[in-house]
Image (cartoon, rainbow, N blue to C red):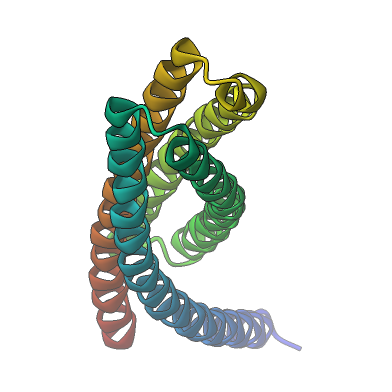
Length: 226
């Protein structure tokens, strides 16, 4: 076989391999885009539900704190102990929810890592500058998710400490110890502040998730034009 013929065959084989690789990459990207869209919509829905529920629970907890403080002023120890019991129950519930939210934040970090790896792989294959920009968006999303995870863990630890402190005051409150009542009030007020901060954090996550959805929509339009 002549040299020119061999060269032509080799070029044709190389083009076929490249075409197959690009087709495979395009299919993988389409599947990844579909997963990201589903994840975005699901997370935004969860954020909205969580914000509504958390706002309601903040209002309920604040009412308990106010009732506890009113009982302190009247020296109504029966009502004070009843409110202290309700406060501890609410704090325990919030600690459980904080653990669940921390677990969710860890899953979000893993998801962001997967998305970033996918963009890195696509950018290496295509060399397209648009893929480089999308990789930058995914890198920022991962950084935001890691920061949210860290802050959520700190809030959870603070809530657990305040709950433990409140549990340790039960006997003293039953014995009508006014110092214990003051400590319980302070713990409840600090806990209320943490709950409000948690709502603000989820509202911030909702804004970030909406931004990610806009970025993913732009990415899908870009991929369709390639």
